[in-house]
Image (tube, rainbow, N blue to C red):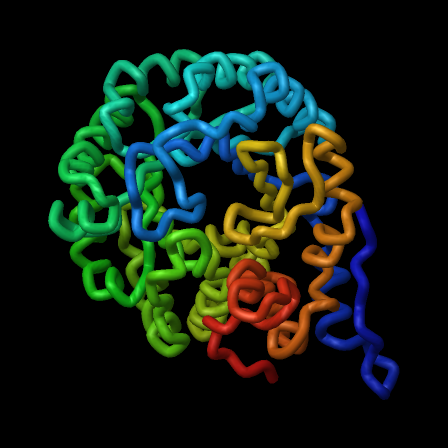
Length: 375
């Protein structure tokens, strides 16, 4: 693994907190990402207000062909064992007629895969069972409101809420783990307790709360302010203790700081913190443990950070992740600027690089959603 860069020690000759923490942690994701999100197509029959991909009804003629997609699967193997886990997403991956064949190919190669479909008539009980038989290991569905009025208003298609609830049952019937994704904005925040109570009645294994990044159609929505986001994370931490499913955040890695502060206040030691569900995610962020492949083969640190390291049609995926200047910079917390660069939690958190870029044009800048002032 690449040796971590550290800042100089303290004037007295003792290593700084940053140097010690980075030496202990290292770049655990320098060899390979944990997750590869693959946008198989931009086509989708929904018109979601926050869509990162600004999806359209028809497929892009420049999408990777089936043969090119098979080559990408073999590129994933070049990371070595164990290979990263694939998440087939979109748009709506069900709009690709070769989805089942790609899942079977990944399964044959020993690559685990999950599915993030849209709740449209293409998502049927039979489709879920076929994809399970092909090798899909889990499914994620989106729920952005506690009732049809709220959810369907975000999705732009009547009936989406009811179909999502039915699909949750079909996923359970197929014996597959279900993750539910919920958007966090100033419009959805007040409804989150009601959404939680609804999810508690469903066969959910994980609730992932996605804190809005202003990209795609999401530029028309408003993020929470930092103080409101901090209060929400405190509520999520308390909620997780008695929740019937795991709770995580997406594009809000400072939830880890909030959790660590609460754990320390409760007397937890470092080993117990690292072994917790939050601790197991330490350091993961855009470009460090996360990789995104677009429908046309562009490789970016995540679907929300539109900076391209290269394209799988012209370069090898493993080389782009391990060696491109973009990914190397994002994996080096010593290069972060502002409060994120000074923060004692920068290695386990690191802030949302996508939000920093969306607000400032600099992916190494501070995450403006985090109100924490470093020591």
